[in-house]
Length: 403
Image (cartoon, rainbow, N blue to C red; front, side, top):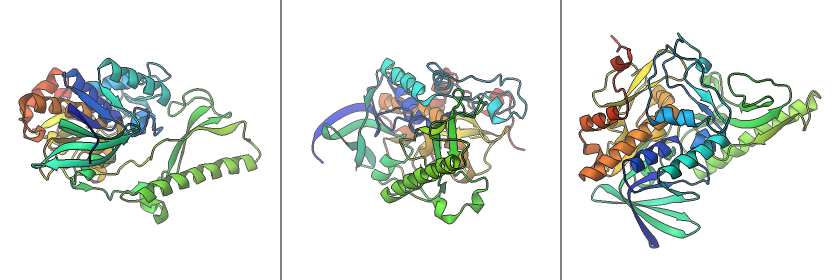
């Protein structure tokens, strides 16, 4: 495609929670690391997308599951803004708001994330779009990007797709799953003079999240509010209809006479598409519905179910690796191999951070050993993860497997 050429050890696509964890870990391992982000803000759906709840790291019964950068990032989310971690250790069948989670200020977290990336020497490229990828001899050789400097080729020894949209995988022709439904909805930050603080969404008195359109029963959602796959037209349609739905809400409330434009109004709208499930690679081991509390010999960490207390999951390393054998490539975050209800569990912040850090470790080991990341010995990856404080199997945190 021509243009400039830049070379790195590790290239990470997407500066959401998965990409930040991957880039920070790779940089901490001493690798020359670039982080490519299409917006000018870090944090992805959690910050730019205003989904500002760092969902639980525990199982709701007093057992912490996720550690490492997953916990480090949770604590950083409230360093420069409001938010308190509940006393979760003695919880039994605890509701989400009483678990090891926190609601944070998106802007405050962005500042903390930028600070973290700079402290660790990550080369950050904001306002940079991935427009293509080149494969040679069965592996990703480079990605092509465009920004204000023009078209640039990024060469690396290992690539991590943490984009949430699977943009690198799709441009490289890696097969994936992309037909899971997303529902017309919008999360927007608003001022509401009537409200006092709650434990859930409120950042301060009268400042809270307005969540609209998420169906209580997804099976009954009108077909015109269901989106499958992704296209340029779909993105625009989803955003425009979300804005219209929110504006209708304010108009109705003002017309009723109890509120007006000075006592109830939007403060900030999401600056990115609020799709939850866009593209997951077809991996060497896709996680499936009801595979909680199963043992995977190549487990690289533990996560809980953010929706309910009890279930715990081991994440197989193979879910980060494409089934088609494409080399020099790993997926992280919402792009790992997951299907059905398992995707609901793996698409959130804790799993994103955990798989991102693992991808950063594996990419670094790939560079060091000149071995494709998906041909690494999983036990060697596990050894390094244990050194970072990761429990890898449920009995290590006092939990058991299904009978």
